[in-house]
Length: 273
Image 1 (cartoon, rainbow, N blue to C red):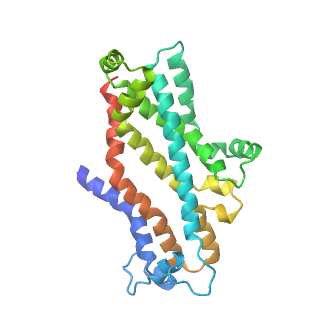
Image 2: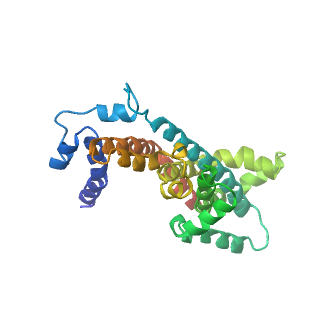
Image 3: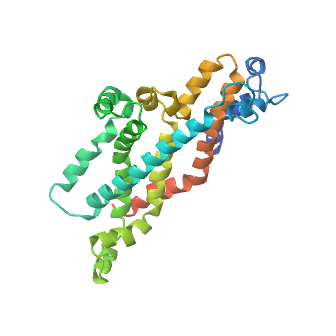
C-alpha cells in the first residue's frame, strides 16, 4: 500500500514538470487543445529562439546573460553560507563557553521567520546599504536566512565526531584551528554537501528577492527572465513552457544526482545525541 501511495505522490509531483517539457515542444493551439498529450510535431524552434541559436533579425536573446547572473547569485550565496555556517557550527559544537546553548537557541530563532515575511525590513536594509540594483543585495539576504538552518545541520554533524579524535589530534601537535581544518572538515563532507545542495537549489529558484531589488533587466536572473519572457510572448505558451523547462530541469537533475548527500548529511548528526 505504501508503494502505491508513493507512486501516486510521485506522479502528482512530476506532472507539472512533464507537462512543461511537453508544452515546450508544442504550439499555443496544441497546448490549449491537448495540454497533456505528446507533441504531434515537435517545435524545437521554441528552444532555439530562447537560446539564441541561429537567431535572425529579431532582438538577441538575454538568456545567457540571465544564466550568468543566476550563476553568480548561486556561487556567492553558497560560498558565503558554507564559510559562515561552518565556522559558527564549529564554535557551537566543539568550543565550551558560558551561555553557549542559550546563544545557540536564540540564534536559531531565525528559522521561525521566512524571508517572505521580512521583505520590507530586508528592502530597507538593502537600500540603506546602497545595494539596490546590485546582485549583492540578493546574495547577502539569502545568506543571512540560510545561516541558521545550515548551522544546525553542520553543528549536529560536528558534535557526532568523537572527542577522543580531537584529543588525539592535540597529542599529535594540532591546535584548535588545525583540528578544524585537517580533521573535522574532511570528515564533514556529507554535511557540507547537504548545505551546498540545499542552498544551491534555494538560490537558483529565488524569485521575490530579485523582483524586489533589481530594476535593471540586464541584472535579472533566469527566474525574472520568465516574467520578461511572458511579457514579450504573452500569447505564445509554447515558448513560455520551453523557458520554464530550461529553468527547472537543471535543478531537478542536480537534485537527483546529489540527493544522497542530503540523506547522509541530515542523518550523520544523529550518531550522537
